[in-house]
Image 1 (cartoon, rainbow, N blue to C red):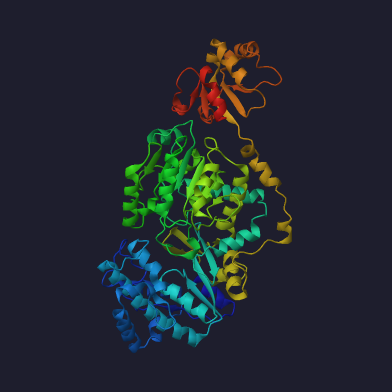
Image 2 (cartoon, rainbow, N blue to C red):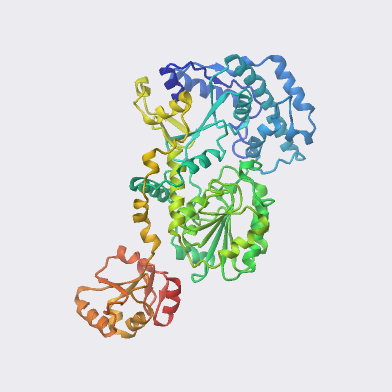
Length: 612
């Protein structure tokens, strides 16, 4: 309504149309989340009329475009369909069954619509009836108005999908809106539904080779870090809070000296059957089974299967019972080096990303988040990042194991600066270039909007950049993602290079204690025999001021003061600084903030060198 008011202020003729209780089922109420009450339509109409009255918005009811005979005809037609005809139900040229199918998948949280189940048959029949009602009314509306632009919500769900398809069939330009992937942002797409991958593919083709500026890097890195802590999301947080990596390893029984691979399943019932998300595998289950078998044959890796929390957990929107049962059965026969994490287990997906060497994904955003950490990623189905240069996309299912074999050489928690570079550019496209800031409507949560303005003056041209951009997309046909300018195409990667330098040459920091090194000179001698200036390892030595002269003497005796000697940093360190170390060099088990951290002594430095 805010966008429509802005369009009117700029001289556009606007007609706003609302549903007045025409459907027996719609996406306001899903059976697995909130079953539809008997007075559902009355409740919805009351809420909507209150809101439009508060905003002073003129509107029409969709029901005025529906004839009484058409309601009877829709009921007759829906009842006449055999169960086997429901999924492909067509009325004239209208592919009603296809258009409402994704809503039915969400209604029951099922990838496959089993119409032999009486409850699912009734639901599908109800959505088919409602879909034809939408076709009758919206077709007449479009014929009467013949709009230049049709502005629609979502485009995936039942009547909104019908609206998209009928308008496209008439050659009418459709602009669809949805909530953005960041709070108080929205996305606009043209002539496709909100789930289409084409907008991000177009954006990536245009911007993929354009380096990020320092400010852009800071914005996207800050956002990715916030997401790990459940903040700045366009949806409710699903992952558990971050946990220390050693704690996660211990809970799962993972080997610290062996690479961990993590497979992230997807809660994909919303987009199952969508060609954009197709896979070379017959199903997600087949992909998981083949990955498990590969791990069974390669005992040198640990495989963790993280079942998506939205499949069915205390954080999920309903539960996909069929998929949960599939995962349960898969978990009954796992080899010793494979672990499965149930949706409700409080283990952070982001902690798993940090400790893994390889991430494997289906359609999940986890693939992008893994790549933003510099991790090797294997994409097995249609995905925003599928086909990009920074991931391994499975284009031929028969060669899947070859791809996995090529990654066996990666070390523990391996990171690539170039993967990180490309992935951060992609993330900036997705979260910033395609998401339009819209502070005029506050979002205390994913389902609630609150006006942040009290005068139409706030909607005037030049007052809000996000609103102006929405208006240009609708009225002027501006691209939903503006292409780069000549100046932007001419950017150099200096800012990226500077920011990525620590990742390109990662250093391992190991904590030691001066008193112990002074008392046992063999520790320093062993360190000097293992590492020199060419190694990316720093020995950080906690050194009280009183013992500094004695440490200097011990370092000299061990020959570590030579020009090509290993990097040593000594000083009196606080707890926070010591906690930054990735390991401890000591004969005693670490305590305090580093309790549980990997510990090495003179005898195990060879193992530390391999890790480094």
